[in-house]
Amino acid sequence: MIFKTAVARWKKRISTWLLHLILAMIASFGLFPFIWLLSSSFKGQQELYTLRPALIPHHFTLINYQYVLGGLHGIGKAGGASQLLILYRNSLFVTLSNVALTVLIVSLAGYAFARLRFKGRDLIFSAFIVIMFLPAAGTLMAQYELMRTLHLRDSLLGLILLYTAGGGIPLFLMRQVFLGIPTEIEDAAKIDGASDLRICFQIMVPLAASGMVVVAILQFVGVWGEYLLCRTMIDTADKMTLPWGIGTIIFATPASGVTSGYGVTATSTLFMVVPAVLVFILLQKWFIRGAAEGLKI
Amino acid sequence: MAREAGKATTGKGKTWRKEWGNLGGYLFIAPLVLMWLIFGAYPYFRGLLIALQDYRLLDAQTWSPFNSFNGLHNFIEMLGDKAVWQGIKSAFFLYLSWFPFTAALSLFTAVMLNRVKTNWLASVYRVLITLAWVVPLPAAMYMWTQIYEPNFGYLTYFLRDVLHIWRHTPAWTSDLFWYWPAIGLASAWKGFGYYMLLFLLGLYNIPRDLYDAARVDGANGWQQFRYVELPGIRNIMLLFLVTNVGFLGAGTVEMMTFTAGPGDIYTTLALYSWRVSFEGATRLGYGAALALFAGLINLGLVTIVFKTLRSEKA
Image 1 (tube, one colour):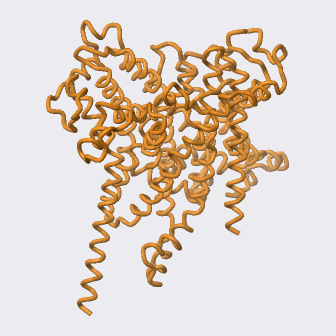
Image 2 (cartoon, rainbow over the protein chains, first blue to last red):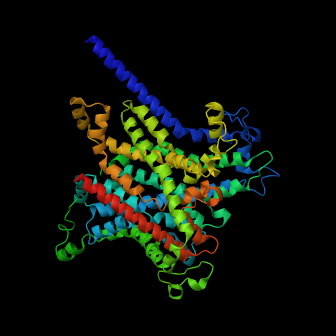
Image 3 (cartoon, rainbow over the protein chains, first blue to last red):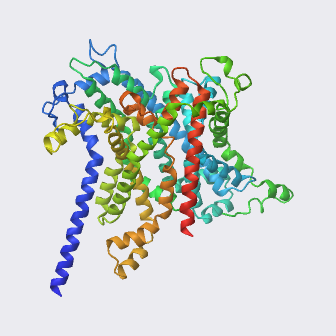
């Protein structure tokens, strides 16, 4: 009897260790490219172009950072150099405006679709959902034409507006979240004479905060990394956002000399990755909670 | 949900209110609906029309549908276009190179992660594994092209000098065969964390007593997966399959940033459609027709998968 329980305990212990071993392996697969990127960004020319690349650089150097952030005198002028900062500013502007705009209008609409009764409500909502499943077709081409006609092509404002239009999934999520909030709270406020707008912002919004965080993260991640629309709409180097503009830095860097294309690529890519990663790590608890709510299907 | 709005407040306008409901609702949805109508729905339908035009960006004469309407001519041209067939083939290879691996890995990881009992450890794993999802796709592709660098990249070094299993490694991204595993692994790395999270959230939503019941019945790990977890995330699996079965529209951004194979020979249909529209002769009409074609095939695939899987449930 004692022997049996001992065996069972060991079996359990071994399977637990095995579980952690497997997960650690998968996690390191997920993590490796980040580590590689970080390590490459601190390496100079000699250490990047070697047949035996080390994970931890032997000679730490900030030369890639210097080039990417400020430009090196004599080399950087013509190339990318502080171009990265311009791209950064554009990306931040576009992404943050879009996140704010989307969260605002999607929360309003989600609340209305979940709680207010008006004619055609369910019809309009299903139109949103149906169009999500329609094949994409020539939308991008038509958006090009539309933006050209409105003189919004090659402008950051146009980009923000286009990004805000694809609100199908956020809307679905927000409606789901509002549906999950018990009606009693609202009814109590109604009896106290609060208006719909006040109910929405003072009572519902705080309760729906986790859902809004989910929408914000999804939108942030999506817009921060969006490439195709930006590439299609933006021609001017100073109006590009990071994903599209970074290619111009990468290919404009000097191939020889102190800095190298390889190191500059790594460093600028690192700069593009960091904000998204930070946002996710800081908000992931909220995100998991909110997403688990929205995904009850 | 059903809240008889306005019943208590209005006396005279009762029938009017009953018919239209709470008019404030329209104000609430107006911003979203307007944005969507102008920048989403309108371009969608305009795009369908562009596919029937000989629309060329460089020639303003062809912009109006009255001047350049050419019926189904774009679609007829497609039949004889070699790049279209090559594009379909490439899209299929791309799909094969990332999808099966991603699906298996994400499901496996989610099930494993769901068995971790220590809370803080579970969230550490979760964050580390999901991290790649938030990386912009172009950044992910740049990261991997560096790893795949044929002479100085880490992959070559790892196989040749650390594991000593492969002396003459190929030039990964510009090799006719190894291009596919290379882009597949990079895409899988980028995508599997997200799908893992999706499955994991599904697993979190399975009621605890189902597990307890299974344990009382003496179910082992595999049986728990087969009879509790797999049925529990059925809907999520359906969502996963339905949203990913449309392989034909994929590969544009991946291939723009990763390269489309040696000499661009692996250009997928979607990428070809973009290039036709916005590069060279800038034939927007033909590009839109190609995109519509890809979209319709995708829709067909989604419908088939959805119908078969849903009927299986009954």
